[in-house]
Length: 520
Ligand SMILES: CCCCCCCCCCCCC/C=C/[C@@H](O)[C@H](COP(=O)(O)O)NC(C)=O
Ligand SMILES: Nc1ncnc2c1ncn2[C@@H]1O[C@H](COP(=O)(O)OP(=O)(O)O)[C@@H](O)[C@H]1O
Ligand SMILES: [Ca+2]
Image (cartoon, rainbow, N blue to C red):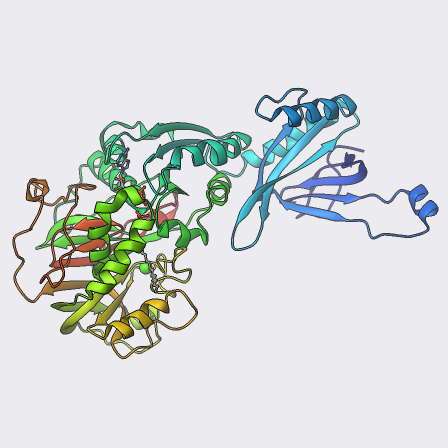
């Protein structure tokens, strides 16, 4: 019994037949939206056992099918043991196909499950494969060709292995072709994207690395798009053109906060599956300026004081891998520096909400003080160290950032505040912490900017751009200025303006949510 069958208008069955799954007869059916199979209870079985079991049924959304493949006699991608089993299986059941699909497990993690079905004839098997593939080809948001950049030195230096062992096999099952570039130096991916890559032939770019690597790719894509459209991104008020390519993140860095905060976990297979099924998540991109000169874009954390000091110190300990942040964190905590300055900001409109649901005025607000930390969270900044993040209710694509001001307090109080990032307590519920949802803000240190202490030769010669990956300053106890931690890159300038200007940019394809709208 095969071929199109009569059904309700909305759920037209494309294919339905009796198949064998795990030595059990099943009735399998495919329509536009789902693939289902249901065990068929054999009458003889029921009679002999005398017990009637409820037949089990399974349902898989077509949009979550990774791929469908014929079971071949030989599969050299498998281990010797698995190859032997496959051979035995294919001799016993020569007309079988396997469906690979997304299975949701705990903590937002996804896995690629498989189910094999054997058919009564080779034609039926081919038909199942062909009809299912036709349905998958109708899902136009799925990428077919990807450009992959791997940072081999990110995190625990496992980027290449993570990609080869966990990601490439699932991409292959999904029929995705990938051109892979393993970077040879910092800014390799950025420069390649800006000047060389033939972007027309790809449906998306994949970043295998951490937040710093993501930032490189974002800067490369934005710069390329502006160059192609003859827009000078360094010109104040320049209206930026939207990028047409999405960025997928395979977490292989130290913090992986951009991945964790968008996907809910930092798991390479989960990310690969999200990429395969064409998921997308728009997010805000902010531009950071010094004296009206554009410095960088930021998507996760822009932090002065504590997180700036942690980053500056941790850069010297890169060899330690992700543990460098713990060590530098303890050091910055013990230094207990605070910085004097003035923060002014434009609150978001009321209807965009407030991190603590307080009413906001529409005027610019100015706050002078001594700050241990000034953090602008453009998203929750959730990561394994802090599963709910720096600002748990920050939104991903609303054109606002949450500005968290931690004023001078005792070490014990600051410790209490930090500790609350790791549990369910409210880290804003302290007298020395305030939080505002803002559209833009400005920070001016009290004392004028001193001469930079180290590596001045590495400072930008070209106005308007701070070279990425070159930053190195020292965490100096009691210095008048800290530096800014911009998505894990150091900005040497203490005084900055930050505008949430690029709204809903990123990870999304050719639809309206990929527009860059200047908002300042
Ligand atoms: C008493 C214990 C206290 C623990 C406090 C934990 C708070 C952790 C909040 C972390 C927020 C991280 C925001 C993300 C920043 C990344 O962009 C950046 C760069 O990440 P990357 O190294 O490129 O993956 N990482 C850091 C640590 O600055
Ligand atoms: N091949 C490379 N050699 C050295 N640095 C690189 C290379 N590729 C990328 N980088 C730089 O490494 C930095 C950190 O990368 P990232 O992947 O974010 O790792 P982590 O999360 O450990 O910081 C980024 O600033 C990026 O520009
Ligand atoms: Ca936001």
